[in-house]
Length: 93
Image (cartoon, rainbow, N blue to C red; front, side):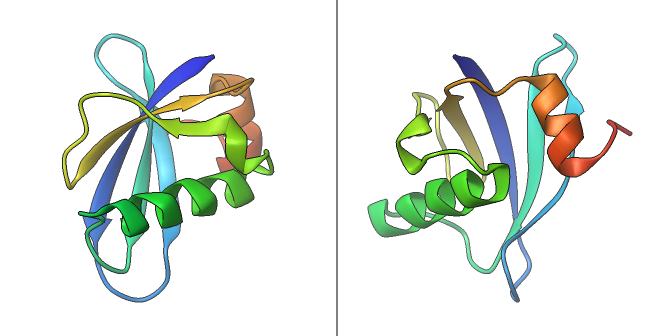
């Protein structure tokens, strides 16, 4: 299980992944543009469903972990690591 940070930027329009990177500790995080800030349970469910679809994994494999805020989420992903992120979103910048 990989714990992945997701940094959200509300920009309107469609939800999209703007890429990914590694933080200072070498942990991967996704940069996600969302139509509105996910601040409630329904928006959080929509985010996990969007990421599961984007990563082509079952929705049950994506779970919110502790330490979330409106703009930074921590997700637990079964079977996803940096190599999978590179395949899905291209090489890390």
